[in-house]
Image (tube, rainbow, N blue to C red; front, side):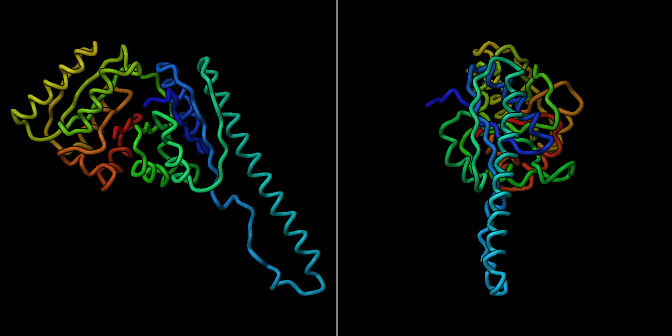
Length: 285
């Protein structure tokens, strides 16, 4: 069942602006609503630690009252900060078009929150790195990897800056998720009018060429004129090179498959793939 809604996850990181622009692009092409989530971690909760035993009897009441007031002020400030993030995100998305936006401010674990709410959306958009990562280029957001493992919906991983998407590269290995990605592209208005290329990295066999031809036929039936690429080499290195050297603004890949891409979500291949690619990546389950 479709919901005509996507979930955009924002925080205080430099990637949140890119998340908003990618979410607006997706929503505008699909005629969807955007639900913006900002989830405050448990560290932002009011501190419940009991300090009474460390306070001398005569000063206990006054100091406990001050500590209580301080906790309340901290909690209020955290909520105000969260609301400001949501307001900024709403403004960014609506500047990109007449897009319905809803906001959600939650507290707790991000992955638990999204796992509970993902059935209310058709796609999730998240930044490649989170607030804590800053400009560290060698690390992905820890929440990103957890969401990729937990979510059953397509997840778009936004890179640092949004670029208008006109060409799409599809990582193809003949597996069920890759076939599902091809079918999704052929049917979804999100990809209508875009240029699509299929790329396979691995051993050249008659079976794989036939599978590529069948995938291309599916795309042609959807109105596309796909280009097919077959190269030997490790998938993450081939895809990183192609996206870096050629004009593809989006990489689409399945979560599981028959080749080394099968390691996606359960090994280092995915981490290396997402880290090395300079374009947003749409992960299909």
